[in-house]
Each structure stands twice: as C-alpha cells, then as structure tokens.
Image (cartoon, rainbow, N blue to C red; front, side, top):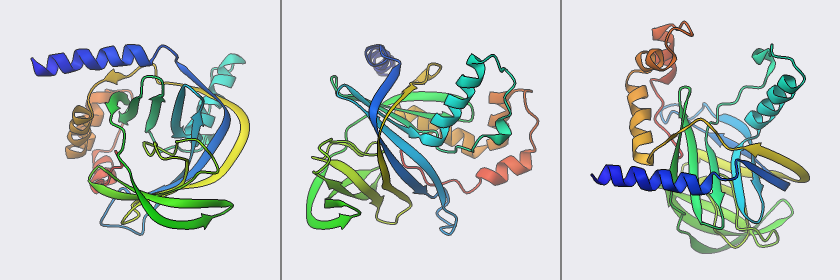
Length: 257
C-alpha cells in the first residue's frame, strides 16, 4: 500500500515538472568530469565533457558530448537524412541528467540501465560552509562540504558568479561551483569554460518514473548478470558475446548517484 501511494506521488511530481519539455539557456557552464567505475583499478580514469544550462526557472546538467550528438542526429533527420553513421559520433558514457525545477524546488535525476531510461526524484544536498579560500583560475573561491551516496565531497564555489548552481546534484551554495570532488577523487568536476551562447535541450520523453531505490535495484540486477539482462532488454536486436559483456561490467562498483 505504501509503495502504491509513493508511486502516485512520484507520477504527480513528474506531471508537474515535465510541463516544459525543453530547457533553454543563454549562458552555458562547461565542466570536465573525471570519474572511476572500478575501485580496484584507480589507474583507469574516464573523462567526459559535461554542461550545465540554467535560467531563472530551471536548470539541467548532462553530457555535452551526448547533447552535441543529439543535435547532430536531429539536424540530419530534419534535412531528410535518415541514414546516420553513429560510428563517427563521439562516444558518450555519462547517462545521468539532472533537472531542477527552481519554482517548485524539485530535482529529478534520469539514468539508464542498458537502453531503458529511469527518472526519479532526489533530495537537495545539505552543505556545511568551510573557512578556506583559494583562487581557481580567475575565480576567488571558498570551500564547502556535503555528503552524497555516503561519500564526503568538497566543493569550491565563487560568489563572483551569483548563481547557486553547479554540476550534477551539487547545487545550493551562494555562488557557482567551480570545482567539486570526493575525498578519494573517484569523482571530480572542474569548470573549464563559461560561454554566452544560446543552447537548448529536451528532457527525456520515454522514461520510467520510479524511486532512486528501485533504480539502484534494477542496476544491481544488471550487474549481477550483465549478459542475461542485456538479452532480456534488447531481445534479438543485437548479437552479444556473453563473456565479453560480463567481463566489461564485472568490476563496476563505483556510482556517483
């Protein structure tokens, strides 16, 4: 009964948030994201360009690589080119999208298990301001701390950019977050550009509303049997080598969430 009530509340939340499917921004904040997926192999570091779009009503954080790919695909389709060579597009591995409705103070994270997108509400992070200051590039910054997914993160924010925004779920400080990382630096974001340019992107349309707990459960089901679950999700559309698929994911044990 409690799960049914929770599901109804989640569906109502999505109905309120997703009235506007497109997020527009005249200023884009670009972050280089470095992250690990395997705690037993800290020498293997993944990197990807990400972007934060924000306006007075909402904000959206996502992979900039994926945004550019989506724009290229859409442009080709609009020109009548239905045959797209996906092999020439840059590879994007960051699936997470974080959408904030500032008026309703709601935060939604979208993430994938194989080819299925899930959307789930998440809470705002609680910050403790630090007393240290340092200069990062042109910005005078102050530090702050929060806990996310059981990890302690340190952020450096600047009041010279008066937006309480940052990458991923790292928001709510009195200024733009320039740098943020956990104590082992498994996850690391650094601002590498601010551009005055009009950008827009759409929120996912085909997704399954759920809870973060259920999403983590689905993800763990996949990690327990990557080849088997891939077969269930993808059917006969692709041919896979079970041993290769299982080996690719056998040491996935680090998640930002």
